[in-house]
Length: 603
Image (cartoon, rainbow, N blue to C red; front, side):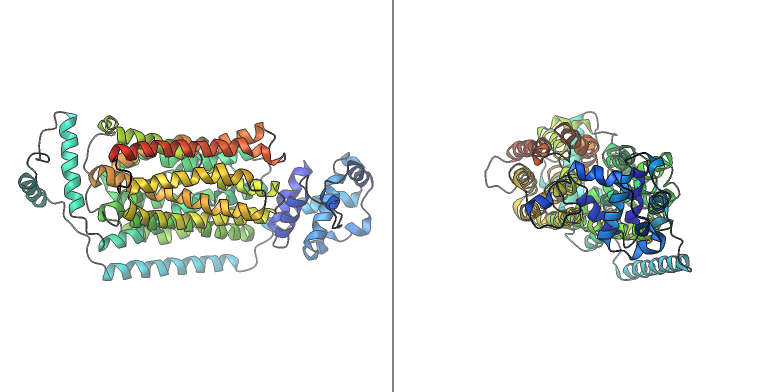
């Protein structure tokens, strides 16, 4: 039991962060332990005889004397060596340990350092003051933007619709004559096409649309950024409470992420009835309050399922749907770059929130990391949500527009989205363990994930721009091919730092391209009038990939030897992810030629 608790406590202190990195690399079978020889044999595992000898001999009392006072001032390498000696000693009967060894083992595991340290005097006042300053700055920005911004357009009035109907009768009487009858699905499709042509023809291509892009970017920063930083919170929760199992805690995060897909149709319905602004305000409030309440349930797994998995999941899914629907209404020619900017904020938020969350966890623990993030989300997200305004109010129809399944192009995109989400999280989830398997440090693995997130942000903008000049469906096809090539040809042979960096950057760009091109594809193919329901139905197909994509890769890795085995153990999981990306690319290719058979057409 002590063997499990000791490494959980050590990384919490400032000086023991480097200790954790040293231990994680030193404890691997392929890493060196205590020898400092420069020869290749010094990097092999410690012989069993040496381990047994070290376990059989007690650690001298002078080495352990005054450990409570000396620990924080010891070099990380000495901390790691002492901890590993204690770890080996505890492999024998606990009764055989000396009193000094028992005291040292208890103190290192449960001593008043890291999250158990008392807060410095006045720290809570400082946190309250900084939070209040952040709220005040957000209020100034909010009212400043409102003071200079033009009022949002109000074009969907009864008079405007009647005038547009007359225009459509004159301009295209054979194809788009408005009908009032709703007796069959053909009439519904016809009316949707007319409404789409009408809405897209009046898109301002800017103006208040850029305010919408900025507001949606702020919302995406927090909703997706906090999701990407879940790994930091998960590790901190496991370190704080040894009773929690990693599989159970990871399922909390999976439920949070999968809510985006599971609730897509319900959220589309909510946006139809309450409007995008009210939906965004509700989503941000749910996300922020869920984070604050999660700070009070860090030791209760049931509470985490409710606050993080359900409450924060509902908030994130509502905000994601709003961001997928509203910016597309203000742009047609610039729709790709607009969506690219919105979703690039998600990648940037992932990188920044990961750094922020790690600093808060190391300084204050997971409870206050949750709460402070919640306060920041409410302070900056709610003003941004208030700026959201639909240009084209979404028409009210059925819960699911089943007529879309009569269109082959929709079915192909529906299936392509479902396949493409399975490999999306495989690379960021497994890069840290893969990097240590090739002999790199855990810090290098974290740097690779940061590079992946930043590349994802750049890819969202780049592919958004390419949507406007090369066509959104072509861009989606390119992103899937790029992801498949990187996983099938680069990752399996990446056995050093340089090729891993290349893989992280290329796969991150492809990953970001999927998120920025899919809303643009749906908006361009199915039009602004049907973008809400079409996007909701397509996002629903992502549920399986969000929930099971990375776990399946983990099961394959364990089945072929696990992360402590050879690099070949990773190959089945890598080929699984790459083949699904390639399959998704094939479906997108079929949809592309269904829309336009010309090879170099902008689709």
